Image 1: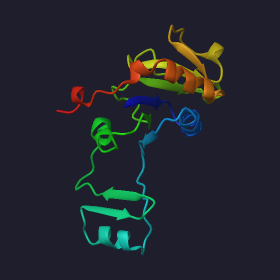
Image 2 (image 1 turned 90 degrees about the vertical axis):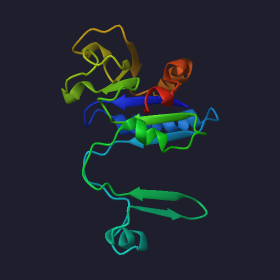
Image 3 (image 1 turned 180 degrees about the vertical axis):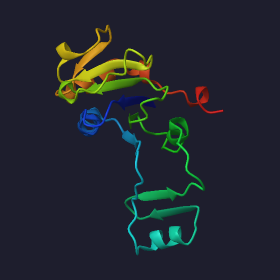
Length: 178
């Protein structure tokens, strides 16, 4: 599987870009998964539903399955920051690409998403894992770079760049899980 991170500050357009890359990659017949980092408390369950009631009763894991999908919810016994490599190990091994949104400080090769009008700082001068920058205005980047510059508004071109550089994103779990 190929794994690429999309990192940047809130409002830069990471979610929109990832959302647009999914059909662009699928158009090539590829199976795509997404791994999203959530900074806040979130829930995929609803109060009163059976699975919610099971979790409230203290279940460590609740797996809900139908003939169309399954969802696994696992409760951590104490708060901790999930490790991206452990989460990648949970995904199906038959996937072609995993688009990782967030995990800005991970050691995954990543595309930094930077929008000029947000005035957020950039990560690429200090992050050796940034391999390209997707931006809406390369002329306004605050620090010169020799990295590949991608047009944030042309997701098909970003997908084509990913496919042309797929070998850079080949994931080797044995290098990360011990």
